Image (cartoon, rainbow, N blue to C red; front, side, top):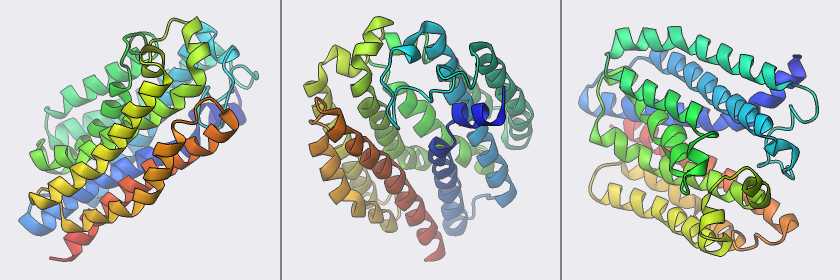
Length: 302
């Protein structure tokens, strides 16, 4: 095990998603503290963010471990956004090292989790248990169910935002759930689009993803529906006063969303599809960042 292997298997650029999710959850808590006097602690926000980054690293490591152990990573045509990190097939890491590194990440999460359970309340424990199960079961079990995309939407969308909110308030609220749903749609779609190039390799290890079950064309329509739902959700939440009006800044990504929707139907040409996958990553990150900015601006504009 070496530094290059660790950095590669963790997939550090992908951790930007967790960074934004942590900021979004904290931004919702801060917005409510400014408007309604609910609790907010900047130290908790930073510490929770560290925990989220480690948890996301664990997700990436265990995905690498299970995909390498099944042989999938040796059959997949890698792209910058799909097909694994390449750390294990290229010899930077061994399968056993992947496992031990993932376990180390879990061990690091124990004191962080214990701290917040003591400070914020035991109701955080069910969320942490669910998140752990999603990490462990995703590759060996959930990916074979026929509709696995809900899992990253929940585990790397809803749960991080609500957890980052909970550490301040000690409760789960409708407002935090509403704020987290665009993340669900976006992260769901992040995994869905990245599955298109892996269909043939996934079939060899009996995975059952939407592009396999529905076919790529129907899966592209499903993807497009979820992109549209992001903006419908934000607009509806603002209209009914469940999100601050500044979260409408997320509509600035609509032109990019249109490009991604059109590009999702170019799945048969990988050279054209890879730029679409890149744009989808930009869409996922920038839309959530703008929603977080909307909550921060809403807190400032009191």
